Image 1 (cartoon, helix red, strand yellow):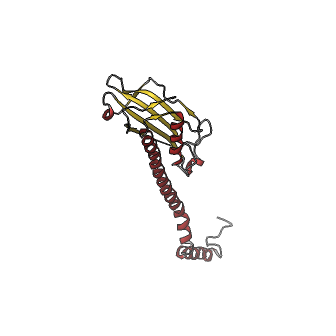
Image 2 (cartoon, rainbow, N blue to C red):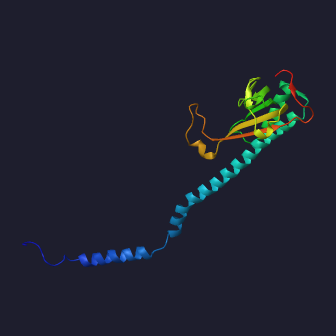
Length: 209
């Protein structure tokens, strides 16, 4: 066509050769590869490190929750008679075992249960006391209500003490995760329940429960 040359414009070939050489030099250049690899692997290493820490902390806390229940049950079953003050003191002692975990406070329930084959689920509440998460105390379970007792403990005309501890474990990730309607972070529910027979008497009475 008129006005166009059938030959490449001057300087096109050298420019292409220059780009090709620059690309080859860039391909051979290994400077900064270690930094890029480090930037890619750091998030994975941090995730593994934090995950290991959280799992270890969770397992440790779960063991302490079980220790709270065991300690409270053991102290109660060594008594021949209890009252509100005694039960509340035992629950406070149990809660102190969780130190230094402060992200959540435990709810501890202690109940004296009459076991009889005539009870629908094996047991009937004789007395109960509960420590709430805010540190206040209340009756907890209503005396006279039927309650479930494990099959292995359903021995007719016996008495057992039940201790239940509820706690929420809040990992670090819950700082940025969903929250419930009250704004409390959603964590992992931990619960332990232990059943002990009285040591000194057949049935432990609570004078003012």
